[in-house]
Image (tube, rainbow over the protein chains, first blue to last red):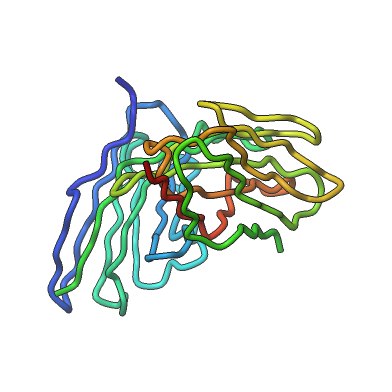
Length: 115
Length: 114
């Protein structure tokens, strides 16, 4: 079955640590995205990538970093510079053809808690 | 800039009641409009979408019609079930973005009680 996987489901971080959230897709999609969701709020875009080896900052990129070395993978690193990282993180992908009403497919999410 | 406004929740309904969740948007041109659903502890799933004015998206008994004149995309279902309890997000993809950026509303939480 095609889909998006995220791991781990729950992640605990001590203050000052960097942590990396995994996102893998086998949908052969070109575009991938990272969102942050806080309680009672909508999704905010952190980073996106339209193609391998290229990515762009979203609305709240400070304190985060990404890489896109493979089409299937788009890991997100939450660095110690992110002052309030406790949130639910969602990865998504889409076919990525501009100009088309493209659907984004979401993974199950990773809940990050800072201890 | 483009934006989405949804009715505030939480919304609590009895089983078999009629559901309406209001969504209005601000955007230039003709955006594509979406409803996503998020069940507790899970990611978002596309519920339905519409890509042009007067289009009606439908899925699992839910419907929404793209109304350009009122810039609205209200979600409706004639008879809700307990299993419909979730958070519903209205979203748009702008007509002039160079990539697939989707703007989400804040979400409306729905609880259906037996």
